[in-house]
Length: 492
Image (cartoon, rainbow, N blue to C red; front, side, top):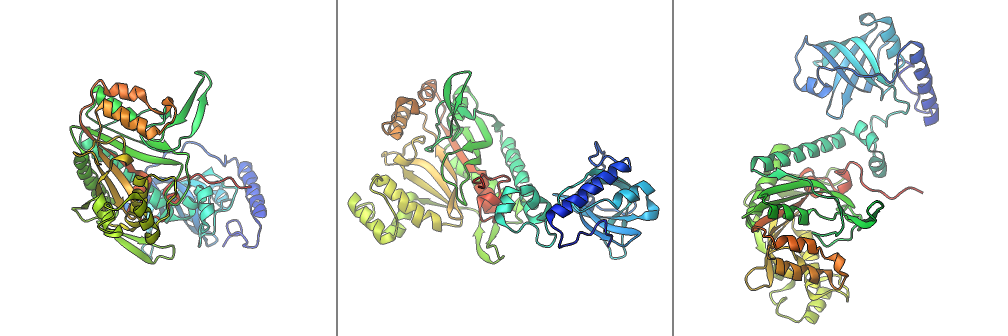
């Protein structure tokens, strides 16, 4: 291989950067701008490879990700996150300046080429280069081509290195983007209107979570980043919208784990005149459609880091629907709700479920559900008739002990809650005040309660954690694998 292309493996990064900077100087001496400008293309490397035909004149651009130099000719691979294609360069087939420019290129550089397609003797679709344009000189070496970026922390802190060297990671984020586009399309086709609601709010409502707090200097007021868009979307129902959704970011100042990131993507949708069962049907249809479109079917394989199969999630319809209390009885005993609260606490010790003295009885029950039911439920299950204390924004079922909701559990975690939305302003006021639990009045959104007094139609509503949904559908083991730039603790 040419010395201009092949780097010595024992060279330090500083030495490699120095070599590349010298080439930068040499490119400019040739009269070439190493950071180019506008470059009109006819297609992309991936699109050309997917819809290939010989003897086509094409103009493409991409990053040099592989080079096989044979002296007076060279085969190289040009690509981006969506695909790659081979190019062929011959000293006699291009100008002296272009050949001199090629000799100053390295892996990681961006170039544009014009040429004609042909198939090599080994059957590889290729482009014979007639003209070469330098678009961006890379001053730092690419990750090792055989191993890419293997260290997980480096993948998350320097996502650009991960994307340029790990096609599987790049493919996952392309799939995520297309899934989100399909979700929007799915809802648009069913008459939903996409809206935007405030991310800066004076009262953090719509969920029980700790918000991020900030201050607006010009208005002289405290604000929070929203924890949910729910209360503003319901204001739109009052205003006359009948089908609305928002697909955007929420922020919660809470823990970080493989299933939690402080900044996350959420879908919320509301349909006037529907209920929680209307929304369950909608979610089931949508998720199965995504699986069939992007995952090749309704059986989703989850593997460990070594590629060993951990489990297969079966999304085949219809999905199971089960009562919250019945599911808990299956793991805690048929008498669990007949014994005293003190006996339930003792039962938690037997079950190995950790609780605290500060927990109310319904929170103890919920802890048993989360640890013994939710974390062991992998195929889809709509958990219905949940305790009314847990969800203050949903309609109460006749009798008042439960609410008309579902919690969709897949792969051991909640993917989506769905409600028959509470639209009685007096009951809503009582429930929000109870949820505030003695906090100051500004923690209750009384403006929202007043809005309900103008009349909100009965409605069904859903929330879907998009990051968790993508994890489930792609088999990703952690939320950091499906969020391009997850929040990480600063390095010392």
